[in-house]
Image 1 (cartoon, one colour):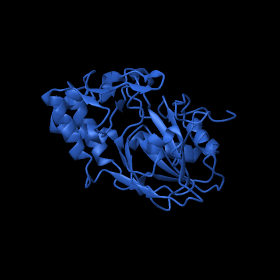
Image 2 (cartoon, helix red, strand yellow):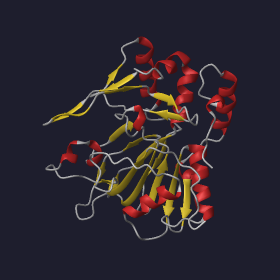
Image 3 (spheres, helix red, strand yellow):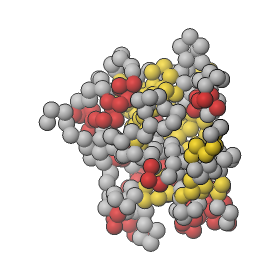
Image 4 (spheres, one colour):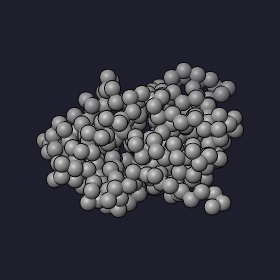
Length: 304
């Protein structure tokens, strides 16, 4: 059910204009026009029916993301993990700020905790990015599940943009710029150090890359201006400036959703951002995030 492509048929081959334009026409004609287009109602996200699972997989194949609205009142980490498992996501990426089970509790952290120094764990706005942009190529985050337990009192709206639409915009503007962002040295994230030395080595790699196994497109990007080094040539810098303009306010392809309790997003690591928010200290905003090295795929149905 996933949008698996043979590499030879990939529309992301820069020398195959005919294949690209045929794919481009289909992609633009079928893109989501509003966030509500992405919503699939499910009775119990932890135990999807066949029809619900097919609907979720079809949305991910078409738009690289889906929003589920879970009518079951039970909310815990197991829901996020169960959704992922039922959609074929298996290789969980347990990053260093995640909980012991590999799932991240996205909530405002006290100033005394290590997490408080990282914007996802504050109430400040979170700029455009894809998850794991600081990871090596062999550890690319290809999908994530973001499950809402409690929304903020005000704000906290998520912005979503299919990264394939960003690819189209850049290729249409200048294939030379796109080629620059596909170079293996386009973007470098400097090493992260802690009191014991280098905690994570510097990571250099492309912004756009094509998976050699299935021909799918991956994007590695952050809009941050600190702790990032762009290749210092004209084509790369012009491409980066173009992406910044493309992601600015007013882009009709940006879909905005305020997740309510029981709602969640499953995505092939699309571009995403988050507004600032205000919390109720007695019931602070809480979302569970699980990140995966897989994309969604038709998983075996339980009990055959």
